[in-house]
Structure formats: structure tokens, C-alpha cells
Image (cartoon, rainbow, N blue to C red; front, side, top):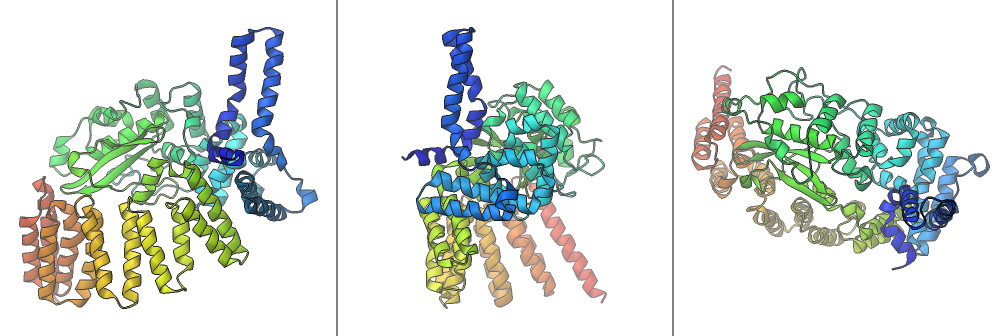
Length: 591
């Protein structure tokens, strides 16, 4: 491997390593030379040499004097030219560095008014921190507020910011927008019991820096990736609660999941189907003392984990017998544990959670990529570089060159999803056969990620059907069902539900009844998932066309056929459907 490639492969760790380099050198020299003047001289000499060797390349592009080089936008153009020259020579590290600085220059040009000069200069000298930041920054982020958060943190805690830029930038990506006021962190707590907002930005930053400095965290800040840190800082508990959890609860990575069961389960509340918290302020100490149901146990564990610098995710899934909540957390670098509170009979349910950067529901593969630290793989970083230059070529009007670079990205790393999506998007106006081939290749590339494989198979089916091959398209759609029926019936049922929407427009009532009986029987073990994906839409359809008796029979068939471990949950679904049916019939009779 070339020297450039070695540095490029380890770019994510460079600044973290160098931030501790002087300490390491000083301690080792002390062991050899003691505390005399010789030790001081040797320490300084070694420090200068090693620092120059590891960081000297940063001086290749010093902080520009914009008054001499023009505007920041012109600096960005110059950086892009230098990046392209290095890229053409396959000098990946200088290309990545120059591209990161081009992105910084654009940011300074359009958002620079909120950033003070010392912050701009520091960031300019940390191009690979910038590169990770811009990879994570999305069009849906509130960009001005992101930079405003960075400025506030740098102004309040400049030394801590320089020591922990990953934390500062993760917080800026999360704190730029307020979380959802209805559903976050979950629906089963009222606004009166929980103030749905993030804590103060600067106070929270100081809390996690203090936790790291006092070595009270399970992980060290420098060991966590920027995207992992977004799942630390997205707390709804107050700083006082987090400090209580950090200082009073003994937590280790091996035993963290036990905190889920430290909350006594409230069986009375479960049996009464009272899903909403009813015991006053929704605070960690109160939850631990008074108990709760699974969603409260999951909430408690995630907040305790985050207080101890552990990325954590509360997950809610619809299983055979209803809703259940469990937790995923980072047990060790690169090793996530998604089994805290998860029941054995729900192994196939992925569930839903929040992406703290967008407050939207992340897809299954996004969580899988996070768990795998996919973005840190050297080949993936190289693929991302190829894709960055594909976008640059597109902006310059060189679409052919852009396609070539995007294709190079997927050859470099077949799981570089942005390149696949871009290639399919720009190919929409081209030869359908070529586009179909591309979609098939994407499905193969992501066959270990059921939701992505299903997405690209669905795309392939649409293309096949567009050229008149409806039978082949149906086979591809059936493949989605058959591949996921056992382990991921939730995905299989998504495809079945799509087929149902089409069938309800095109098929006769008798054909629909036969399809309904077949699908409910096929997916009977998926329980309430089948109830929500198949039974409810079909009953609603029957009510719309006023087939009251058929609707009643459909509900009765589901009640008898679906396998749900907790009968009360199935009874509730049946009761809701029959109630809707009764109300609709009365409404129609009074017209």
C-alpha cells in the first residue's frame, strides 16, 4: 500500500491520535531519562520531529488570506482545481484534503458570517474532521443553525472544542432543529409529564466533556465516531437527571443492558391497556422507583447509557402480539448490542426509531451501516472520494465523466449506496434495458440488507413491467415476499400490501376474498403485523364499497386465523375493526 493510501485509510483517527501525541511521547521519555533537563530537551526534540512527520503535510495549503486570493468562493474553486489535479494522479490523500477544504471554503462563503476567524482557521487546519462533517451534513439540516451551534460552542469552550471536535460537530448536527413535539422520544408520555426539548447546548457539551475528563464514561470521547456521538447527545432527560444517572449508577459495557430490568414492570398498567405514563414528571429516578412498561424501560436505559457516553437507540416494533420496545447500544467500538429488552419471539422485527440528525425514521440499512461502521472502511472512504468527484464533474457539466467516477465508486466498494442511487437517478432518461441491468446489480450488491434488496428488486420489477413483461415483474415482486416471509415478514407484508392496493383497484370481490384468505393464512404467524398490513386495509376497502357482511366475515376470519401470543392484543384489534364497521353502517343508514 502506498504511503498516501495508508494515511487516507486512517484519516478518521489521525487528529484523535495527534491530540494525545505529546502526552505519549512525554511519558515514554520520562521512563527513559527521568525528570532532568536532558529529558526536557529530548521530549521537545522528539515532539517536533514526530509532529512534523505526521502533521507537516497540513502546511501544504495554509490558511488563505482572502484579501489576496479573492473571495472564499474563489478559494473554493482553487481548492477544487488542486483536488482534481491530485485525483487525476491518484494521490488520494491530497485529493481528499483539498476537496474537504473546498467544501470548507464554500461553507465560509455562504455561512461564514456566523463563524469567527479563529474557528475558521482551526477548522481549515483539520481537513479530515471537516470531511467527516460534510459527509454527514444533509440538505434537510438547518445549515445556518448548524454553523451557529458550532460558533456558540467554540466561543464558550474553545479549548474543549479543539480537543473534542467530533462531539461539537455531532451536537451541531443534532441541535440545529427541535425534536418532534408529539412523538419524541415516544408517544406514551404527555407533554405535561415531559418537556420535549433538548437540554442547553453549551451546558450539555460541558457535561459530556466533564464525563470524559473524569473518566466516568463507558467509552472515551476520542473512541467514538461523529455519527455515533449523535446517538449520545440526543437526550430528552435534563442535565441534572443525566448527572444523577452518571454519578449514582454503576454502569459497565457488559452489564449496561441490566438497566432495562432495573425498572419494575407495571403489569397492572399493561393489563389495563393504559399505555401512557400516569405517575407525574417523567424523570429517571421516578421511572426507576415507580416502574413502567417496556417503552419506559427502553427510555430509561437509553438516557442512562447516554449519560455514560454510550450511543443508544430506543426501538419500537409491531410484533405478533402488539407493540414492544427495546434498546440497541454500543457495547464496544464497532460492536452494537440490539438485544437489551428484546424478546426471543421478536427476532425478525426491526422496529422504528429516530435519526437524531433529521428526527425522521431511519431505514433498516442505515442502522446496519452504523453498526458496521461502514463509513470508516478504507475502501468505502475511497468510494466516497470517487463519488465526491463524480458530483464535481456533474456540476462542471461533464455528465459522462461523472458517471464514470460513480461507477468507479461502486467498483471500489459495492455497498456505496449514494453512488447506486445517483446512477439510477441520472439514468432515468436513458436506455431502459441498461437501467434495468443497473437495478439488478444493485439488488445483488445489497442482498445482505433486506430492505435495500427489496427496494432495488421493486425498482427492477417496475422497469420490467414498463417494457410489457408483467409476468416477470410479478415474479420479481413475489421473490421479495418469498425471501422475507420467514425472517422478515414485515418486509414481505409491505410488498403484499402493495399488491393488495393494486388488486383492490383491478380484481373482483370474489378474487379479493380468495386472495385475503390466502394471505392471512400465509402470514398468520406474523400476527398483528398481518392485521395492520392486510386485514385492516381490506376491511376498510369493504366498508368503502358497502360490503358490510363480507367485512364482518373478514374480521371473523382474521380473529380465528391469526396467531397472537397475547390474546388481548388481537381482541383489541378485532374490537376496533368491528367498532369502525358498526359506526360506518349506522352512518350510511341515516343518509
